[in-house]
Length: 231
View 1 (cartoon, rainbow, N blue to C red):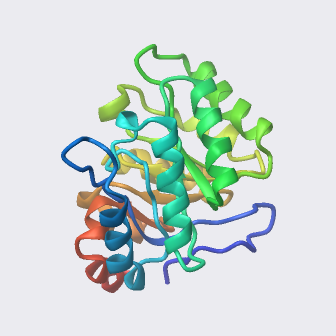
View 2 (cartoon, rainbow, N blue to C red; view 1 turned 30 degrees about the vertical axis):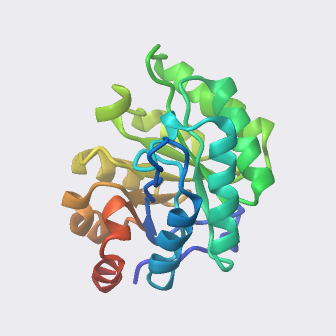
């Protein structure tokens, strides 16, 4: 039985799980965010999902202004009917990621999803410090680490995840690498402390069989019912 999102996991403020669509951001022809189209998308998928993930990679977060980012989170929270909104708050550096996470918290998001810094690649120590700084600055905001090396050109080292898992408000990891041995290793060493969610369609079945708590997938906004049947 795959876990559904919960706020009652001992030692952690929130434990993500189940089927969570990585939502697209609809844009109008003038490149502004089409808010009504975004609402329609959420209303269509909501009966079949366990949470919503706006402003992530699929949501083209790096093309959004801070104001557009905040508005997307607000709309998702308004439309979620109490289901958790995991807001993408990734950025190239710690300061901007922290600002976005704070904004998402103020908008009512249940948690935030943060990639490691990109463009100027930090060391393993730098990656740890990135997440540590955000978590300690916003201790009431649950945080999911986001491993997507094919985009940011850096993987979060397993040992870094192990250390970060001890921080109370670091509650999960989304792994979009498609690297199943990596995910199995993370599950073995940190899966008892944080939720591990798969973010790559091709390894979903193996990941769930290995103990993953759920999924965050772009395809979950296309056929969420299918993924619920997989669970």
